[in-house]
Amino acid sequence: MEFRYRCSLCGCAYEIDPALTVCPDCSQNQTDDQPLHGVLDVELSGEADSNFDIYDLLPVEKEYFPPIPVGNTPLWEPLNLRRELNLKHLTIKDDGLNPTFSFKDRASYLVSAFARKHSINEITLASTGNAGSSMAGVGAAAGQTITLFLPEKTPIGKLVQALQYGARVYRAAGSYDLAYQLSLEYSRRCGGMNRSTAYNPMTIEGKKTVSLELYKQLGNRAPDVVFVAVGDACILSGVYRGFEDLLALGLIPTMPKIVGVQSEDSDVVLQALENNGKFNAQIATTMADSISVDVPRSGLHALGRVQKHGGELIRVSDEEIIAAQARLSASTGLFAEPAAAAAFAGLLKKTPELDRDAVITVLSTGNGLKDSQSALKGVKMPEQLIHSVSDILGEG
Image (cartoon, rainbow, N blue to C red; front, top):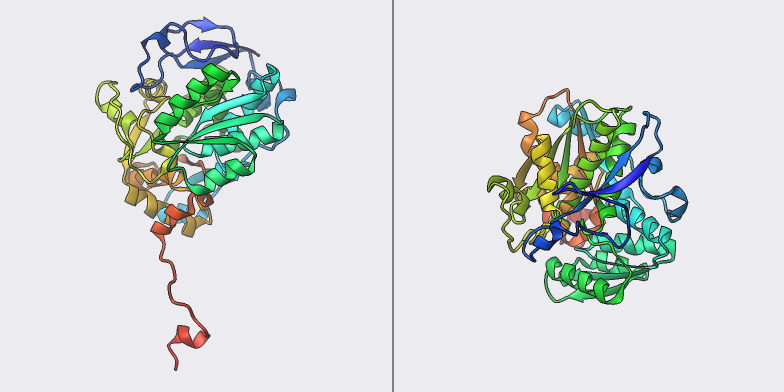
């Protein structure tokens, strides 16, 4: 396989270079309140059959990947939900079983390998929490120095996780968007590689591996419909990129219907779809921290894919997310964090419209223990302390 960068806006091609992050021309139009302009796709050319090795479809040789088992996450067949929803071929891709319990390991894994290939040992990024703890964990396996900028409201579980992995952690006095700007300034002044979402082309490229895995796990076919939660929209971009590669290689005939699900309290990408592509930053207030962003960095890139391939974006409320999280856990035994449960909430909202015989996949992108405090909103904590079984039975 051969690989090169191609600008998702102007179409210009570039040689892959760690010093190149966004299109030099299109990025000149960048403003702080807008998604990234000139996001670079990794374009492959060559041939592959259905027995391809996923590493062969990535722009870094296998020898550079750190010794940590990222990917190959299980595809659940939730029999209870299949019966309850009358969806015969519903599956759930559980990326909460990646090493740091998050989908973000897919991006971190490739970024780490890319940095190792080019002898870069410090990686910097901004994160709402998962990408940071992910890069910290993968970086620990690789022996790399990881510098994180996290918003002040990052859940304690994700903060502690990053610190346990030995990362240098700085808490921004504000939102993810401030952390993002600080990470870019730090990289400009101190060097190293910046892994921040969409800004580093390897983040989208790493996330495409979920689509390649789904193809293999479903018996060399793509799902008919995929539900994925959307915040900064980098995962949505990555899902599309993987299926685009399979299309280009002639391994699938059509693009699956991809449904992006946003919290109504953080829905800038959907608003842009409704507003002829115009992005207006908002102050995100959703409790689903992993999809809480004011400016979706991969928003322009992802929206282009949604429009090109006939995808769909829908809203769910935070109340629907919490209810979906509890139902998913109680029906399947899969405990997903709120952002991951948003995808399932989207499925529940769309169920009446779905073909009962369609192959449908919900992407569960993070483990519920990442943010157990939010999960408490969907369950009733036992308050009574008992001394004997008689207290339960109301005796005596």
